[in-house]
Image (cartoon, rainbow, N blue to C red):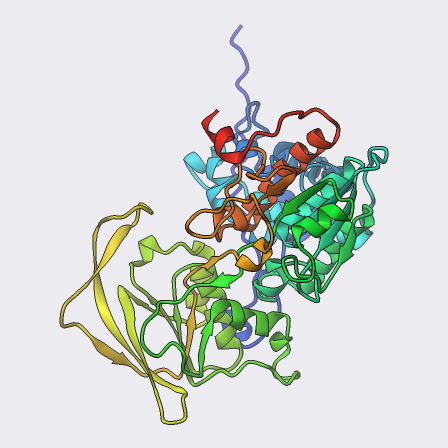
Length: 482
């Protein structure tokens, strides 16, 4: 008797997330992506094949058991989905909004080979938002160890490291330089991509685990790393990010109206520029704004400028669209909102008026040569192609480096020529005993989820050290050779 054929699996298209219309959102700071409805969530969860060897877990820097939480969604068990998700990720409402899933977990989804991958990030956001609406619960905690750990910085690396260490049973204190916790999550990412209320809720969850938070404390100025050890902390994790902006060093960068993207976004976020026009905004935006750079930070600065009332916002980027490091979704959003892209273009000088304010920018056209160390084709100036651009505000979004202040009196802490800390990729151990580091302070500017992964790995290694499982400290450079 012939074996009965298995019924064909229903083909469900990837469910799009509702968004504000471009003509509406370009003048407000409300969240652009509105989240799945229960019906859209159920349809998208149904698409997951529940692979026996799921590649999506390997693609996640914090190793979330993605099939497990989606299976619970398929079963209609939202509470179970939340438990499965929070078991590995302390900040899922944030990750569901700003992680580049398209290059990580979704990039290796089996469905993506012949079609579109499961919208893992959107499902993650749905579960996390549901749990927040229900009130987060404190997970099972290990017995108190009596060990004290200092975490420097309350960004994604610091919050993740602190939460995991608290769950391991250690007493953790986070030292934050600014007056509000969250690091780059709060000062660097605009309200329309990551609402402040979401960040505050996730920070409160970390605090609910018993983590102490000390604000307005600059390590390297208020206290040093040596002071922390003298105060009885047995381990220190550095998660201070990379907050020192980079400039082009071209004539005219000191004119009024030239911002670093860091300063600009901090003014918009921490100084409540996003409440414009109700709030007396601390940000001066001119009629025509040029944003120099092609990453996510450049997109954020450009889209904020549009919302603050600029008539025209121009992205100036020296390579082509193919080489832009920004997420495709953010580029698309910016274009829909009216941002103009002037590609294969590089500034060479900024002009100013007699009062010291920007009045224009001289640029040169570029062409692409052979790939450079980054793997992208190297931009080469085209001789004789200079032209003037009429702008009155320039925002430099060229990347960042770690602020050197944290290294004051931090003897034995080796750094690279770019100012980043030398630390083992697997453990986070630095060249100074009992000091770990992770996130942008080690890698330079990178993603939120990669910083979280580093914080998670360091927390596990710190726990092993505090429990006496590590008896010989192996400096970072030796560990990398081993």
